[in-house]
Structures are given as C-alpha cells and as structure tokens.
Image 1 (cartoon, rainbow, N blue to C red):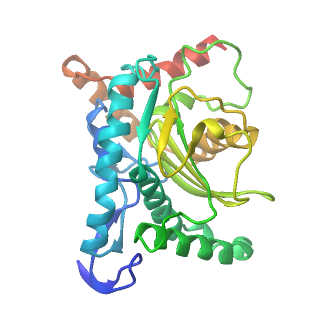
Image 2: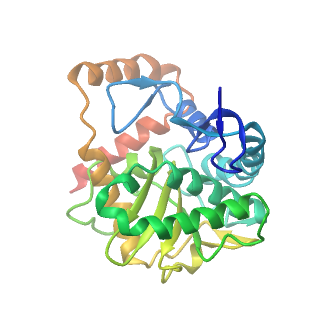
Length: 300
C-alpha cells in the first residue's frame, strides 16, 4: 500500500489494491473451473490466480463496500449459482425471487462506480462529450455510497439473471458467438457502453449482469429487472429491450472473443489440464459450458 487520495471519500490515506469486480466472483470462477486458473480475454495466454485490482480505496471505504459485497454474495449470488443453476448453468425454477433491501442497490452502485471510475474508454477522444454527464453520475453515486444522500441520483439500475441456452427452444441468431454459453455463464466483464442515444455501465459477474444508466435515465421495457431501495426481484425475467438484449447476447460476446487469441501452447496446456483433472473434479461447470457451446453449434 502507498499513501494517496482515496477515490471515494477523497481523503489522504494508505490506498489499497481494490477489486473492480468483487473477489468472491473470482473465487467462484476458480472453484468451478476444472483447471483452477483464470484467464483474461485481453491476455488469455497468461494464467492468473486472481482477478484485476487497482489502487482505489482507503481501508475505511474498502470495509464499507465489503459489507454490501457480503450481503449480495450471501443473499443472491451464491444461492443463484449454487441452488438455482445446475452444474450445466441451467435454471431449475427452485428460486422464484429474491427479497432485498438497500444493500443490493449499494452493492450495484459500488461495482458500477469502480467500473466507471477506472474506465479506459473515457480517455478516448471520441467520448469527450460524455465526460461531464459521467462526472455528474460519479458524484451522485459517491454521495449515495457515503450516505450523504438517500438515493443514487437520477440513474436507474437493472439486475439480469442469465443461464445456459443449451436447453432453449427455437433458432439462434446467425451472428451469435459460437462460445455464447461460456460468455453468459463463465465470463467476468465490465465496460462503459454507448451509442448515439444510450450510455450505460455494464458489469457481468458470471451469470449475473448489472446495468446502470447514464443517458437516458431509464431504459424501456426493463421493469422485471429494475432494482430500487428495497423490494423483490424475480429470477425469471422478461427481457424485452432489444438494445440491451443485443448487447448482452450478440455485440459484447463478439467483441470479447474477437480479442481472445490464445496460443497453441496454452491451448494444449488447458486441454492437458482438463484431461488430468476431470476424473477428480467435483464441479464441471467450466467444461459443461464449453460442451454446451459444442452441442449448440453442432445443432446448427
């Protein structure tokens, strides 16, 4: 740790390496991987033991955000991935909904704040006209996280539950990525997304997606996924916003896997690891997600 300015409370203190996507998601990914390693889309030839961190927070702010992470992991994340989804990542219908209080909105804002404040996209000159709206949202989110305000500002927040598509009925779009199930179930992802009419923050924690608006304040046809200060959220959701659906199921997976160029050497290491460890593995989620992709592509 080195002395610096905490990006949340703005105080001078020893600054810790903070996870952008919470560490419990990375632990789940490792524990459900037959190889026991993590690989990033941007550098898949490098095996890792942990997910990305950056110097962001002082001890007090790190502890503050960790409370919301604990509540989310215990009350939503682990029940969903361990009880609602089977080992294939297919929803079983055993958990119909989750009840939540303010901790869920605080958790979502904390992840989206970290994603936005560390976003490399904002340094791109083509996004210069988005800088002021983004700065305004960051200030609103900081006030909410530090209990200066009781609301998260004018932005809206949406939580989407995903599952394996292998048991679905109907035809797939022609431009769907051949590794779509691996992306939906297994990937960790965070980005600042925009087009001519929309700006939103997108974070993906395995099979759970967080979306927070910047412009416009609200997304249409997203009522089933909307998160407020307290309430209930269903696990079976009606996803009727075409822009959001296209981003989750088409645009973003294709963007990510376009950059996934793994060497023959590392590909052989992965396959050898799988062959060696499968007989002893208790959870084959990573293998079954890949096998689902094979089955779906074969079915085409």
